[in-house]
Length: 160
Image 1: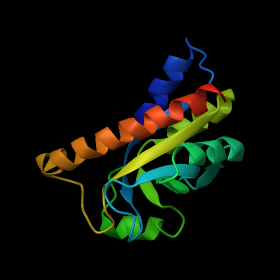
Image 2: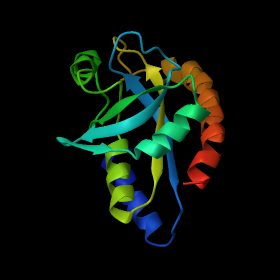
Image 3: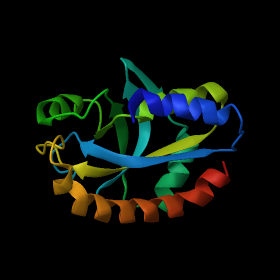
Image 4: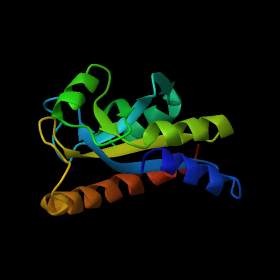
């Protein structure tokens, strides 16, 4: 998770040279109406005070493959965001995670085309911290949906 994910990606890329990358995982919603199970396709990533736009043409092709996904920015934070922080982040982003900015920076630095797809686990006013067993059922359902989204996007990334 977090910055460590970027470090692990950097080490992995030091010995491999993929033609593209698909970053998938859970996120929290930063706006009302973005419910649990919503697939979020990132068009930009925000983290550490800076933004990273994703390739517009690649995102457009991904939108065609995932017509039900919502498209917008994803914010990256250092720790799970509580409801108040998620609401504040909602001014610039649809969802919040802990890895996308770290992974995206490394992929951009190496010139590797990539997409970021997140599935909302916790809604705006839900606090995901503590009691992990409480989230297990929802996480399983979200994982299945995220797997279907990843399968739909694989050809898009492979053609990049």
